[in-house]
Length: 317
Image 1 (cartoon, rainbow, N blue to C red):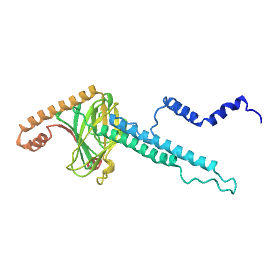
Image 2: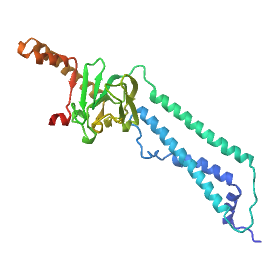
Image 3: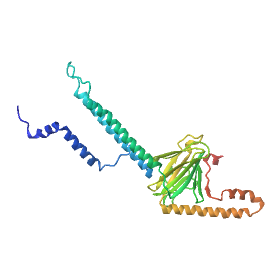
Image 4: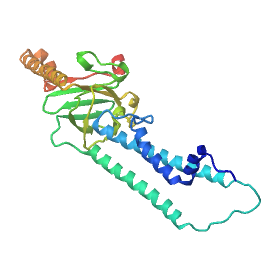
């Protein structure tokens, strides 16, 4: 019998020490993957602090499923190849393997408990509300539009279906891109916590912003409260996701996240328009009786700057 050559010694050693090989792989894998960006798995990374936490949970669960699937597939393939039919002789039979049975019972339970723990932690982060949010906005859904009231600021934006009554965009220009600017705009400061009070005026609607990984129901008689902290400036499309009647498919809105300074400038311009509307109402009420009807209508909306957009169907009519 010939002695093994030097080249075959390393391979033979690895075969004799499979645990050592597995340990080396386990140690080196995090180092190799440390420079890689976490894949999205066809999802959004989350443009809000809350949405990014949801993305991490989703991606982590996906990776855990891949690892379990690869290990399971490898064991199945190994069993097929290792114990494939070679002769008519019946292989040695094993009735019990206590250690193996304990392992394949405990390991799945541990995996489920870990995923459950991360799920609870993420849900608590998403549902947590700050004690002192930077801005409070009352959001009212109705068929088939949205109303955004800025608490204590006397500013209101309201629009129906695809029309944008206040097409504000970044850096003082119009809203863009166009396919993200359907419906009224919910303007918020980027990097600051915004409290949303969500209600419905008629039926059940869905408040959904895809890039936020976030959705909530707007229900009649129910107040839903949550915080959003948009991490980056931008325009984010949004829509109603709960079938709410004939024009549900056109019930869009969008979120405009501005730098805090630009947001304050926008808010100030809307408040100035509120003052102008009040002065116009006061002048109108002192006019002749022939214009009293229009003056009363103006007074009803002078408390806030209310940008009302009619739907394309109403305009056509």
